[in-house]
Length: 345
Image 1 (cartoon, rainbow, N blue to C red):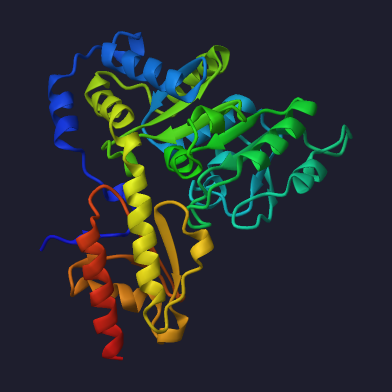
Image 2: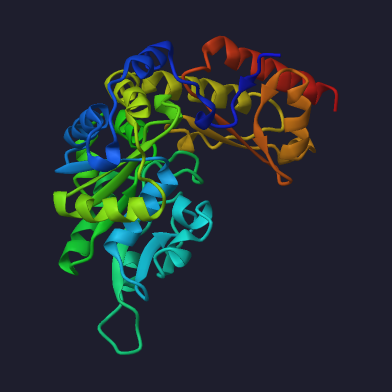
């Protein structure tokens, strides 16, 4: 069965153009700095994001962890929003790999109050760890793809600069944020010292992310990438798809956002389902199905019989994520299937 897969934009497959580019890619040993396609991708990525240099990594998690390792020393403390990806989904890496502790801040829809950030910065005291990094996430995954306003990022960045603290952005879906804000992606990255963004997810590359920053930062980060097993050899085969992702796929994300809103509006018209439309900004839709009497896992299981995959757990929330392979007719089929399931209740 060919499924309509709304579990995540991580399920996207490379386009035919990507497959062709990968087949024809010029390659060399990237650990020796001899892969021309990797070099092309890194130069293009740095230019697009507005940083001096960039580095290809195997995943967003590897990119975030390498960045934290590069910015910090063991025993330091870093400031993060309490439900951000680095805290929630990266296997405790900041403690295990970087030896830092987390000062988490409760955000509103993933957005930290700059006043809370300021009050969380440690003073110079023999009892305290050093605050050595502030991490942001835009778009914010667990908040449902919420976009962090540029004004908020700017204020936090200025606080960080006043205290000589770098800012790292987990920008896994930064191009979705730029699309929503209708700004050049550089306008988001300018309020950061380093940024990670994914070439996979909505951009459809099969593997890979980018870390970007100053030349000195990337030089140090390459050692940590090597330490974590990220020194790839003929990586141009993967980088070729990333070039296509940057040149082609970043320009079409508005379609995914439009489909997400269509889905959210349709879900709100189904009795028992509620979606806060103010949170539907990009390609993620978080729905509350508690009034249906079904858990997320139960609805997910029933939808499989209709050839539809969604993420639902033992609570009453279900997440839907639109992407390149979800079209308007798929949205109609999903809404029809959910309506049919609930009529059987």
